[in-house]
Image 1 (tube, rainbow, N blue to C red):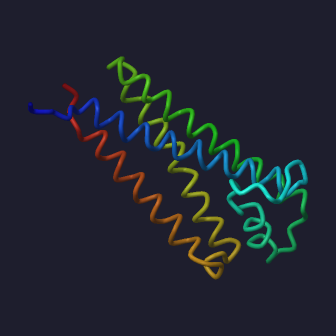
Image 2 (cartoon, one colour):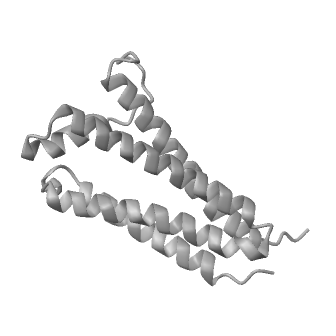
Length: 156
């Protein structure tokens, strides 16, 4: 028996992956934010550690705690919306008139997040903290490659 992987399945795989990725990032960051603010116990394992990372990176300019919290909430909303946009694009693959705009919107919105991170890495001199800038750059490149692959595959 021969199994064929169609272009629609390929696109669903890529869009579904990024949708799940952003929802998982959102969930682990939400848990971390709730732990950092005392709404959840510190013993909960499913937490990213990114709240403390944002506080440490922004400390170079003595950023107040309320601003760190506000930036973190902004990141949470951006990640959640990116995940939802990818799932909407995944669903829209059934409709050829909306499929392309859905995937381009999702990728553009999420790629903009990595661009913002890279600019923030420079502004806060975060390249001195671990591998932040290179991690953000790698994910940016991975998304651009996936966008080009999804756009380059002809629909059947």
